[in-house]
Image 1 (cartoon, rainbow, N blue to C red):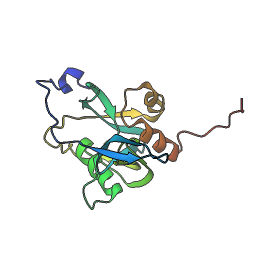
Image 2 (cartoon, one colour):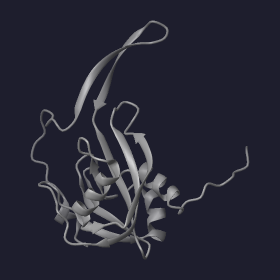
Image 3 (cartoon, one colour):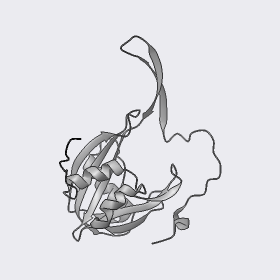
Image 4 (cartoon, rainbow, N blue to C red):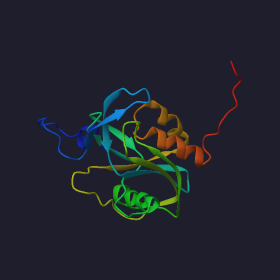
Length: 186
C-alpha cells in the first residue's frame, strides 16, 4: 500500500465553482402559506458496489477525496451514464477503478444523496470478484485498489474513514453479513 502522500492532491487555489455540481435556488410555499427559499443540489444517479471475492475479501478503492481533504477508502463506484443500467454502471466502475470483474451483481438499495438533493444513489452487491487486469483510470483519478477481509471491513465501516457508509451498510445487510437484532423497548 502506498503512503497517503502518494495519493494526496495539493490545493493550489480556491475560486468560483468548477461546474461539477449544480445548485439551484427554489422558492417554496409551505402548507401554512409562508414562503421560503431552499438550495437544491441537482444531479443524476451514482452507484457504489460492495465487491466480494470468493475468499470473502472486499475490493476497495483508496483515493484522495477533495471534500474531506483526506485519503479514504471507498466502495468502487461513480456516476451512472445517461441510459446506462445501474448494475452495468457498478460493474464498469469496478473494472475501471480496481481492475476487478464480478461473476454476478444485484441492485440492493436506492436512496437519495441527501434531503436537499435530486441525485439518486444505488448500492450493488457484486460477488465472485476476481482481478481481470489493471485499472483503467479516468484522467484525474489516482486510485489504489486494495483488499480487506470482510471480518475487518464490517467494523471499519463504522470508523468514519469510508465514504458512502449508508450504501456499504445496506449492501452488508443484503449480502447477509449484518443481521437485524430485536432490542427490548425502553
